[in-house]
Image (tube, helix red, strand yellow):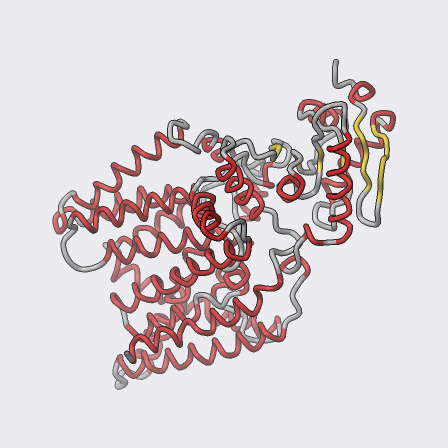
Length: 497
């Protein structure tokens, strides 16, 4: 009973702070959540999974791929089938998976390293600003991390790989890959784990690998229901060379500091803390890898880390599955340094002190977090902004009154526009005016909504240049404080030529 209470107490700070921030909304800059909701709505309404109204453009692939993996939409469909269309329920479902992720991470380290350090991992790994915000968003990152960590718990547990364990690991792997394409890292990680432990465990850990490869091939080929177009997610980012290297460096440097938290109100104090913590983390991670190199978790960290530094995209959220490892590196580093400085102290005493220090770090972090004024980028809901609502209402009327055919628009957040209005939409993009108009024609765009809400300044400027270059093709039909709407004259734009 006392042990269970300790775990509840360790998770309480994360749960409390995350729920405290729940009313803030998705964030003005958010759009991915709408993509998953569009897929879920398509499944519920019996329409093709890929035909959701989002118009993908290669000039701005950063918005999102044409289709997302089916894992999260299918999960939402189950929830919506029971509760009806309830976005809050969807957010709380993801929140539950985020809690499960922290439980699995803490449990893994509690079993294989130290119960006290495992509790400290569960306590600290969820308190970063990114995790707090992401835990109640309709996104795949934390559910994916949840599945990865439960695979690690199941794979690294003592005992034989019986049929039940193989089934559980296989199912969790399929779930992870159905949520994020990054789940493919599980396949080589499990393969490496199976090879390293072949003499001890036999070939049984390789059975899930065979199943995953088979299912993955069928999904890539679009054979499985709801997977048509998934191969499009493998398209490369337009960034290359120095640009992607710089983006990768800054993203993953920020990921490390974010995982180690921001316990002080002063940016300078936090920088000093991160500089002091970095070598301690390195000591802890090196020692852990030396001890645990035959475990699945270590194999996954190596494979997934290698994938992150070689693919053509980079973002802090891609590292969220690794946050508990970074946190453990700090804790283990502190344990190693303390035992080196005070060799007469027992290991249990040092781990107790590290756990107490973790509570101090958590308290400082929570104090800073509660005192912060949320950034507009991470609060609010774009679809509820008055000027946006006004545009949505305008276009519902336009579509109803349109006699010239379907309405198709360009909007700063196309997936949100389509979710709210059911009108197909494409995002802002950047290229020369001639190519811009050609893309508008090829996509069958009827209206251009200019106004980036301070989210897409460069792409907004590019679209404005296209309007200025061929003013006869664009008729201004409506405007408010944030947006100007143009109707595209296909004949004047040369769309038929």
